Amino acid sequence: MRWFGIGIGAVAVLAQGSDVLLGLRPVTDGCRVVYVVDGDTVDFSCPGEGLIRARVTGFDAPELYSPQCASEAAAALASQTYLRWVFGTADELRVILGGRDRYDRRLVEVFVDGQRLADRMVEAGHARTYDGGARTGWCA
Image (cartoon, rainbow, N blue to C red; front, side):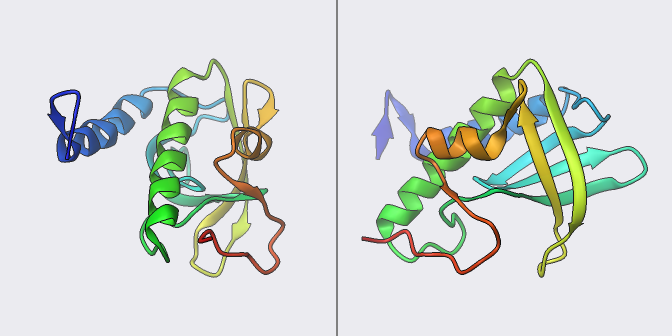
């Protein structure tokens, strides 16, 4: 499949490479975004912590690495792309580090330009609110 004369694989490589640029953008508490794994998982580099994989709290995004259907895979890619755009265009990012989830990821709350990232992702249609209970599927 081709998009504007560029192969989809090239677009994916460009999108992943953009996270290196995001790593140059400091977060208020000194952490830096290193890589957006999917719509609700982000790698940060934080002083005194090093590289951490974090689960952003307050919302659930479609699964990129284990989608249950093609529509979930497409929604997950859109969610990841949107989150990269949010981080890349933000003037201010604030990360509040919390405990750990069952996958040993740090639980974090993120604010973008003063707004909870969870609210922004849900309002944009790239996630659902989530408080730790049972999750519903993304396939119709």
